[in-house]
Image (cartoon, rainbow, N blue to C red; front, side, top):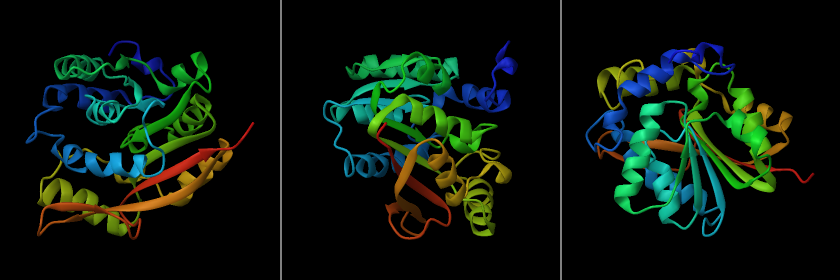
Length: 239
């Protein structure tokens, strides 16, 4: 990761952590099994608000391509970006093996927004805001990359005592649904903070929806409160 320290909005430790686990991206029992479990819900949330057939979609922090492949299979013209080279390599290999045409780039959303402003109909940024030093800058870049009237979708984790107990203590230490150290409490994002960043970036949040886990059934559902995990849909204001 030589030189990464010079990037303005990158946590090198986070990149190394995800890079070391890159081989597990497509393992249903690996470190990213939770993302596989919730991916149908993420896709349903997006498609229920913006049908993907024929749209140009930018998937920010795409990792190994779990959501990018689902969006491409749904008919979107997908570009996936991530700053972990090992993850991008895995994403490219898996897409080729799956017969899907997806453009993958080892780039930041700030880079893409500067090079291709307002080039996308939809931008998705899932499970990423809580892993960067300045999430507000990511929101601003997502807005710059989407066309006026286009949609930006986020998913992240709220910051409060309940989310600490469920998303960190329970998920990482008790149930071991995700590797320990995946999340840091101070980096979690309250909905009011996300909404404020969106407003400053020319985005209007039109929906907030909770994502909930039932440990007895081992299932996930959308809806209800946003106390812990949640998704957000924002629309860019007209120029």
